[in-house]
Image (cartoon, rainbow, N blue to C red):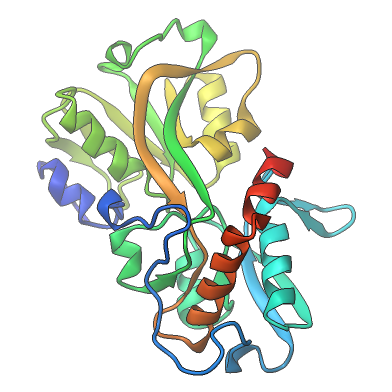
Amino acid sequence: MNVSRRTLCALALSALPIAALGGCAGQGAPASGSTGSGNPRAASTSTANGTLRAGVRADVIGFGYLNETTDNYYGLEIDIVNDLAERMGIDDVEFVTVTPDDRKEMLLAGTIDLVAACYSIAETRLENFDFSPAYYEDAVIAVVQNSSRITSIDDMRGRTFGTMSGSNAAPLLSQKLYDIGFSSGVVEQANDDNSDVSFDTWHLLQFPSYEELSDALEVGTVDAMVLDGAIAHTYMDDKRTIIEGFEVAEQSYGIATQKGSDLSDSVSATLQDMLDDGTIAALVDKWD
């Protein structure tokens, strides 16, 4: 799609899904779900074979990380799904690696039953999926190399930001820079997949993985990488710092299920139980 010369809003509403924060569910508050009958915590017909297929991350330490030697997943979202399944009476959990680029399609196609993969609740996503109550609050931040001497967002004028394709970091960043008067939001030039976009006062590059995004920051291909704080921890070291006083957006992570599915109510009700009895808080403390 060619978005050359279009405004920020056009970009945000195109292939880059922008998260509307007003549509995010707060911690402990039920999110959108289907309306069903009977016991809302009972396993749905989609898990009648006793297996829950959960889409999770394999590359985010503390949330979803795959040890390729043992073939075991570890992290907050792994523990949440395991506890969730046990409470719902599901015998087995099959963890399936997803990425920001493929998780939407895999859930829509029914390849997986749910997504618990640092997936923020947003209005655009609520159009396609049901979400559980939020289990984790996060913020989108900007990380730079200390050697760059970038200390404020004003130092990024005329420079290059990097994000991961498929995440909502790019449209959220575009909106933020427009809101603070950093940019007029006008797109000067863009390639077909929006992986290389030039705005009036800044440049955007998008990468297929967080590892490649981190490498791009290290070698200077980008001057700042923009990503969820929870994910940034995996790639932080003593040579990097967060731009102080600049938070792109707040985000709330929830578990996504197919819109109107039998599983939606049971997942939301069970996750709410886990919030109410302190299980989620204990797991967050464990992995923070």
